[in-house]
Length: 389
Image 1 (tube, rainbow, N blue to C red):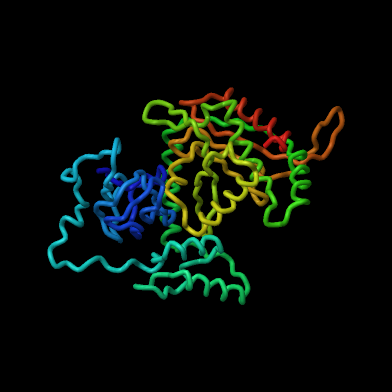
Image 2: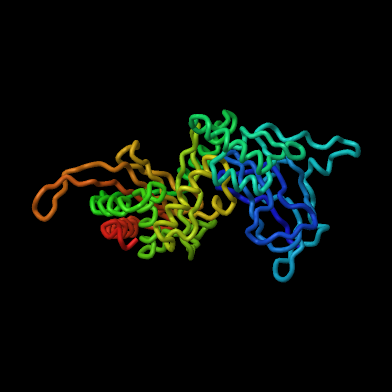
């Protein structure tokens, strides 16, 4: 018997509120399958099971807010995934204290949606805002026909700007980010190194590639930056790590966290798994999907718990350079400013080139400035050979 517990969805998370169970007792579940939805200060997150088995018992109810690490459910498993006996598992105090005859918890507040899996998939594919869809299923559950009707209605009206996050959640998100960054500034001895990289060849290569592609399949230079940032870790694998209590744990897989700005303010940095191994087209597809779901509040738990290093890019409207704070427990953060034009010495002559400022924030407990410099030099080299990415 295994305990399915409230996961840590970021260094700043202390508790989560159960929005919905997607599995019920007696139903089978596969490792990696979404079993519940949990609301944090930043988003509603789909929580994946760490086990394969059968759901034995649900220990908390929709609307319960419990600390990280609290058992949420019991899953009957086989083999080495045995957990402590059922008798050792206690439900949260608020449930133990509920007297007989007490009415069930109030219905979920507005904004917490009941959606069929098929309807959710269609909404994700078509970028439908489910908070504006009325459900025709039992208890107001949103069904696939409701999403199809919303798509048809949207096609007949002008597109609207994405809605901002609710004021309450936006405030909580700001507080959550502030807490995580305060911890980072307080506990991590940061150092910074910076390089200015000539992106002229990379931009020219992208233009050639995109000229032969339909608009929907075009690449952006941000995808090149993320891919190069991942591949450059082959030279400095010690940057792909986390700080665990009093030592460094190197991570064998590269899962780059990509900082995404959210409507109404705030940001999240979910992971693109195995970033270094993805072809650019696949990376671009995943990047677009991740940004869309992050802004819709539909991320998965593995995307928030797996990042091994983070990349933040200010884009075209940002400053020329950025020096970020490391997101615990990671030990490095890569920053890119906006693309600018500068005079550049080329074989004894001066040319105008497109350049970008790349920075590395490193944790001095795990790294040093020399290794940070080696990383940025490798990043520069890779971006001079974009076809190799």
